[in-house]
Amino acid sequence: LPTERETLFYYNLREIPPVPEGSEGHAILQVAVQSRIKLFWRPAALRKKMGDHVEQQLQVSQQNNQLTLKNPTGYYLTIAYLGRDEKGVLPGFKSTMVAPFSSVTTSTGSYSGKQFYLCYMDDYGALRMNTLSCQRQCRLQPVENKK
Image (tube, rainbow, N blue to C red):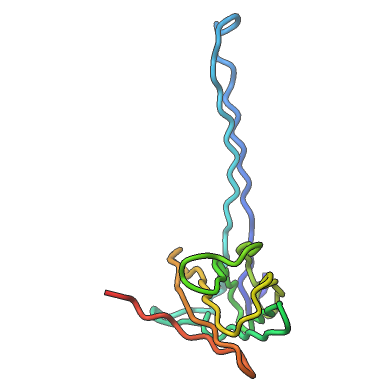
C-alpha cells in the first residue's frame, strides 16, 4: 500500500434472513439489509495531530458556473455541502470525495456568485462549515461557531 497517501476500501455487507421454518402459508415480513462502509487506511507517515486542519489546504478555483476542488494532501477530503448560504445546498450538488493529490470539478448550477459555503467532514464525522470567497483566487475560511 502507498505510504504517502490514504487508501480507501469499501466493505459491502448484505444480510438476507432465512425463511423461518413452518412459515409456509403464513404472511411474514422479511427485511434484507445492505450496507456499504468506507474504510480508510492511513499510513504511519501521515500522522495527523489533534487540531490539524489539512482540509484548509484545499485549493479551489472558479470558472463560470464550475468550481474545481484540488486536494494537494495525502488525505481523502469529503465535501458534504456546497451552498450560497448556510441554509440550503445548491441545486444538483451531491457530496463528493476528493482523493489525495487529485481534483474534482463540481457545478454551481445557475448560481454564479463569488461567495459560497462549503462544508467538509472531518475525521470524526463532524461537519465543518467554511466560507469560500472567490475573487481572483478562492479563499477558504472556517465559519466561527455561533454561541
